[in-house]
Image (tube, rainbow over all chains, first blue to last red; front, side, top):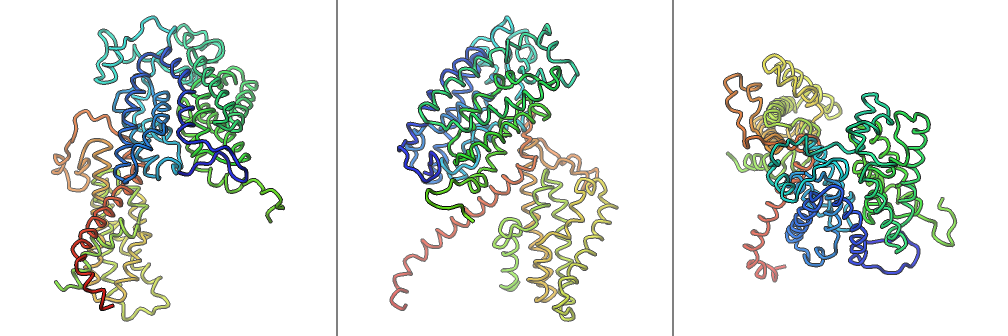
Length: 349
Length: 230
C-alpha cells in the first residue's frame, strides 16, 4: 500500500501499518472511556455497531475486489474509522444511522477509491457528513452529560432506544436528549443572549464547566494527552496539530477579545466539540493529510479557519467533518507546491 | 429492419448510450433527476429534440456547406428547443416550472449536436430519425432509472407529482414504497446524483465484462486452430 511517513528525501525507520494503527487505537482508549463515562452506554453500543458494520463491509468489498481479506481486516484501520464514527455520532443515534455512516465510510469513501492508502478523503468524516446532511433530526440525539441532569439512562433503556426507538416510560425524545454546549451557545447567540447569561442560565448553565462544555472538556483533555503521547512515539507529526490548534486559538481569541458577549472564548473552542479529537486523530490521518512539512502547516491552518467559520457563522454546530473533507481536496495541490528542496539542488526555476 | 438499423438501435440503447458511455449531457442528467417524473419530463423533451434535429439536419444535409454547418445545426436545434419550451410552458406549466432552466439548456446538451454532426449530416432521413429516437431513448431510460432510484431511496415514493405530466387522473399513480420512511436526503441532493450515476455506470460495465467473459469461454477452443494460420 501507499504509505509515507513524510515525503522524500530522507531515510526513516520502517514502521508497519499494523503497529501504527494499533498504537492509534490504544491512544483512543482513554478519551473513549471518558466519553462513555460522561455520555452513557450509547457510545459503547454505537462503537460496537460501527465496528461490526465496518469490518463486515470491508470484508465484503475486499471479496468483491478479489483482495486478501485477512490482512486488511486485521490492520486496524477499519476499527479506527469505527471508533472515530462512534465518538462523532450522537449517543442515542438509531442503529441504522450508525450502520449507514459506517457503510458509506468503508465502501464509498475507502474501498471504492482503492482501499487503504488511496482514499482521498477521511472515511470516517465522509460517513459522518452523509448522515449529517441526510438525517438532521436524528443527528441531534445527544444526551446531557453526567452531572448536568439527575436521571441516567440504564443500559437496557439505551439499548432499546437505539434499536427500536422505544423510549422508557413517561419520557419523550426531548426529555432524554439535550443540545450540545456548542449548539446551545450558537442558538442563544442567535437569539441575542450574551454568553455569560447563557453559561449561568438555569437550564443551559448545567452544560458548561469552567472552561469548556461539561464532560467535553475532560474528553478533550484526555485526547490532548494521548495526542502528545502519539507525537512522542512519532506516530503522528507535530506540525498539523500545532498549526491547527494555534490558528484556532488565534482566531477565536481575536474575535472573543473584540466582542466578549457574542464570541465564546478561545479556551471554549479548544476544549469543546471535537477539537482535540480532530487535532490529533482526524487531521493527522497519514493517508488523506498533507505529507510535506510546509504543506502540513497550511493544512492545519486551513482546517482551523474552516472549523471556526462553520462553528461561528455556519448552519452546523461543529464543522470539523466539513473542514477536514474540504482540506482533503487541497492536499494533492499542497503536496505538489510544497515539495521540500532536494539536498544539493538549487531552487527549481 | 435492416442490420444497419439494428446496430443503430443497439448503439443508442446500450453500446453507445449517451449517459452511460458517452457521458454527455451530464448537467441536466444530474440536476433534474431528483424524481422519476422530473427525469421523464426532461427525457421526453430531449428525445423530441433529438428526433427533430436529426431529421432536419438530415433533410438539408446536401445543401449545407461544411464551412457553416455548425452554426446551422445550432440554429436548428435552438429553434426546436424554443418551440418545445413554449409548448411545455403552455401545456405542462408546473412541470416546466420544476425543470426550469434545464429545458432551454437542452440546446447546450452536447449529445444533440454530436448526433447531428456525427450521424445525421451523413445519413438518410429515416436512419437519422431512428438514431435520434434511439439515442434519446437511451438517455431517457437512464434519466428515468436514476430519477426513480433517487426518488425511491430519497423519499420512499415513486411517481410523485405524476399529475404534473399526465393530468389529474394520474394522481393515484403515486405510490409509497415504505410507510413512515424517514427519507434519505443525500440521494435527492447533488451528491446522490453523482454516486447514483457512478453506480449505474459500474453496473453497466460489470454486465459487459460478464458478457465478454462468456464470449471468451465459447471462443476459447477455436483459438488453437486459428493459431497456425497466422
